[in-house]
Amino acid sequence: LETYASFSSLNYAWDNDHVEDEYIQSKKFIVENNLLAGINVDSNNNMYVTVPRWKLGIPATLNKLISSSTNSSEYILSPYPSWDMQKEGVDGDLQNVQSM
Image (cartoon, rainbow, N blue to C red):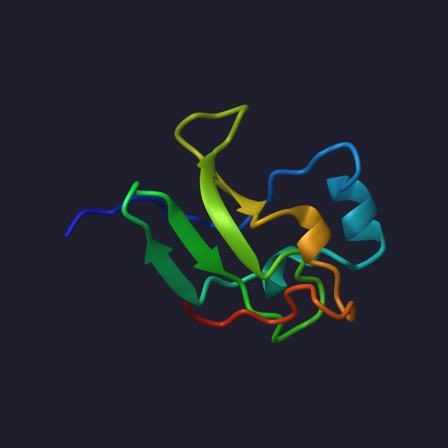
């Protein structure tokens, strides 16, 4: 069995509309509360992971694992299918994905 990625903490693919510092200040991202629970690999070797909303501060509950743009040996989580589908309390958005 080979290790694909390892983490000391999880981080996300932040963009102009979803800024890490703003999420931290508003408690929408609490680093220590983000824990991986489910993993799935598709036929194209894309890896998807779940981060259940068991605690506060989980910005995205379903994510695709991608290489960091600043460090190619580091992996980050890209909200899947998009940031817009991750809003807590919004009907039709992903709320608490635990497994796949």
